Length: 184
Image 1: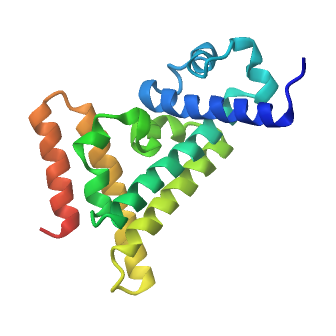
Image 2: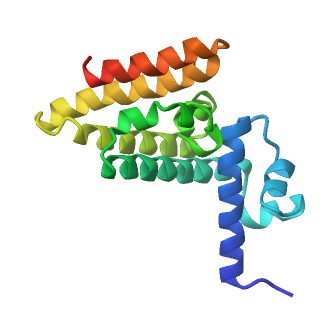
C-alpha cells in the first residue's frame, strides 16, 4: 500500500529530526545512513525515497538544528536571560545533540557542499541577528559588528569547552566567555 503525501512528509520530517540529533551527537562522517534511519525508526532501504543524497539530508538537518537553537535563545531572552549566557551554559555544553550545530559539527559543516554551507551561513546570520538585539542602543552596523564577534566567541567557547579534558577548565572557558560578552 502506498503512503499518502502527508505520511511521506511526516516520515521525511522524522528522518530530518533524527539526523539533526545524530549528526550533532556523533558527527556527520561518523553517522552512517543505517544509523540515521534506525534513529528515525525506519529501515535503511527507505532513505533514497526521501533524499537524493546524504548531503541533502545534512543541509536540511543543519537548518532544523539552527531553528531549534534560535527558539531556545529566543525563549531564554523572553524569560529575561541573555542569549549569550543561555548559549554558554553547562546544559548546552553537555547536550550537543539538542544544541547549536555550529559548535557541535561546525568543522564538518565547513567541509560540506554548497547547500550545507549555505544552511550553516544562514544559521550563523540568524544567531548574529538575535545577538545584535542585545546591542540595541548602538547604531545597526555597530550592533552587527559586535554581534559578529559575540557569536563567534560563543561558538568557539562552547566548542572548546567540549574539547578540553579538564572539567574545571571547561567551566572556566564558559564562565570567562560569558564575562567577556557581558563586559565584565
